[in-house]
Image 1: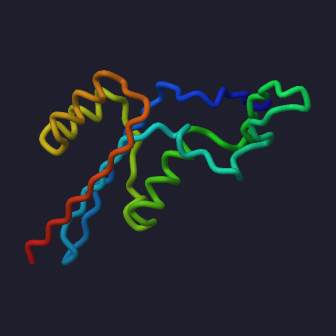
Image 2: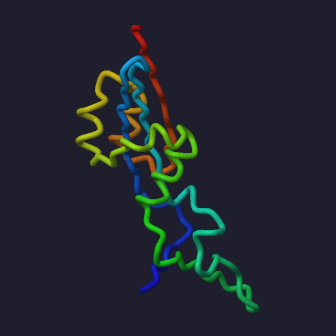
Image 3: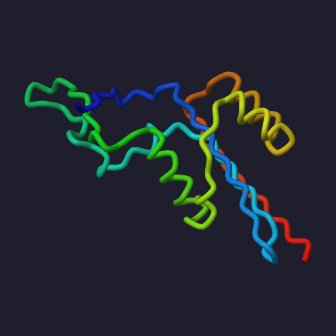
Length: 130
């Protein structure tokens, strides 16, 4: 089965958090909010969106193996590196807002509540008390 998708921006925000800690290395919290469909690469398409010979737009078809979650985690790993991605967890909007209520700006919280699909935000905090 292949997934046909429109190239229009979908309201499909994903919320990822990783809380990494190790003895002597401190603690690192990595947070990301993104719409995976805005980060599709050429390698993700089975058939890329294009115009046919009659100049009619043909929507693309993603490969069966490509999911929004995979794309979101790929971007998280690209930004923060594989080491911090080991503990990355995809959360629902409600879980994310609860877990990050003191770690994200109020403006971002409002954007999330308004479901602005073009949102791409990330932050990382490292604390080492040794």
